Structure formats: structure tokens, C-alpha cells
Length: 127
Image 1 (cartoon, one colour):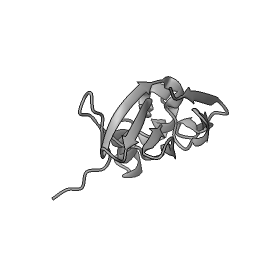
Image 2 (image 1 turned 120 degrees about the vertical axis):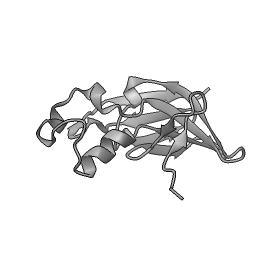
Image 3 (image 1 turned 135 degrees about the horizontal axis):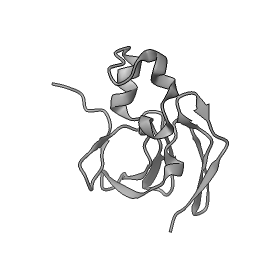
């Protein structure tokens, strides 16, 4: 029996990992999750396989090639289920920090691709 790592995107059934992502409680029952690496690309590199691109060229790929998670995912602890609340290229980061204030969550920094960090801050407004 195998272990499933990740969460399922409700609309597509796609398995999504939140490895390298960030999360924050946005109410007494909702956990907001953003960012994270692409499971297949990340595992290919850390396993040393480099079947997608040579090791020497791994860090030279454009940001879009790494396919970091750009979805705003929310886990409802009462329902024990996930929802997707939107998508934005500003959420596609690994190692970002989250800070919340009232109905706002700030996504701070993080990597846009391996080794390239951003100082950009994105604001999410929860309605």
C-alpha cells in the first residue's frame, strides 16, 4: 500500500503537494494554504534522476518551467475537505511567509524558482 502525499484539487481531481508552501488559520475552522513546489519536478531533482533536464541546466530554466503552485487552497476542518479559492502567479512561491490581519493575509517573499528569492508582498483579501 502506497502513501498519498498532497491534497486533491476539488475541480480537477489533480493531486497537489504543498511542500515548501505556507499556511495560516483564517478563522476557527479554515486554514489557508499557498505556494509550494511541483511534486514531480521536485522529486526528479532531489532524487538525482534529472530525467526532465540535466543537472547542469536545472537552475537555468524559466520560472514557469518549475510549475510552483499558484492556487489559493483552503482546508475546512469541520467538513474535512479542500476548496480552491482562486489562482494567482503571485502565490507561486516556495518558502514564503504568511501574516494575517483581520480579513487580509499577506504572502511575503519566498522563491519564485529554486535559488531565486523575491521581496514581493502579495495581499489576499478574504470576503
